[in-house]
Image 1 (cartoon, rainbow, N blue to C red):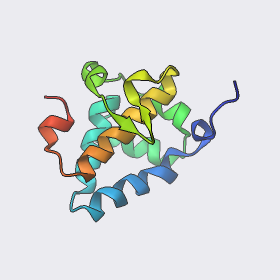
Image 2: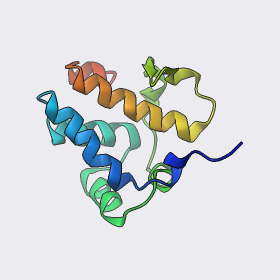
Image 3: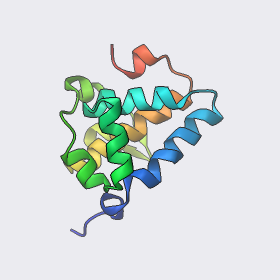
Image 4: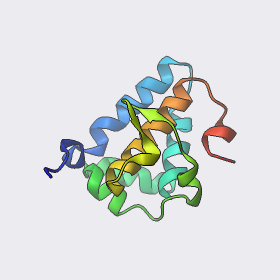
Length: 116
């Protein structure tokens, strides 16, 4: 099966789109960062380093300290695909992040987004 193009896309190119999506709905960059850090285990300095280095999504998730144990509680549809049913582990992580950003943009409370 061919590799998905998103794997080689620079995380730094997509990150501003996540922030723009959130800000259009009255949310903040800090909330986007909090979601990304929660999911991946990066701290804010680590996240900034990943953005500055221009790494692709594959490296971004490969170098992530640890996927949050509650990530398996993320359920729902992104782009017509149920995130909990995605077979490819990397694509599932990307879809988890997409789903969390969607929830933020839809006004969901941070406690619920972070599966607290």
